[in-house]
Image 1 (cartoon, rainbow, N blue to C red):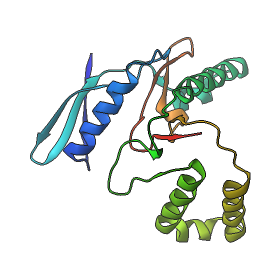
Image 2: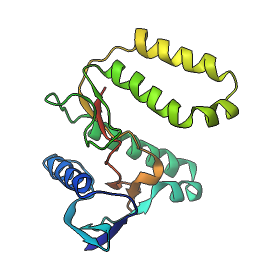
Image 3: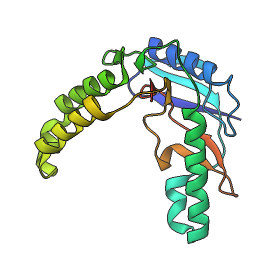
Length: 190
């Protein structure tokens, strides 16, 4: 009923913030389970947590074996789960990352957060992306204009920000049984 997770790089402060965030999310009535830290420990400078064990199979490994109707149902359930997460309103928090680490960003507007986060990511990965993306500069400029002038922010809601098939577990009926990795990437946004 429990699982041990070992962190290569983590701090006590980060894990305490993560546990508090998970505790806050436990108050919502999702149709699926979320990870929940029960205990934080440290051994020889390595941090670990003990949490609830979540059941199901990762959706990314299951999709290739499904027939078209099953695949359609799995994707529908996948999108229904993210709608539930995105329905959580967080009006009392600034736009941006909920868990604060050294490079976390918050802003007074969603557009501002996205542009600051873009700059942060481009500084870290821009050279690599420039080599593999055709018309890289044009696409970055287009995205900046889109965010600056066309994005109409209407809500302050929970954004998973790492929601991929490998972070979703499903049961034998293809219903989402758990959503993983609501962590440092999670943010308040639209």
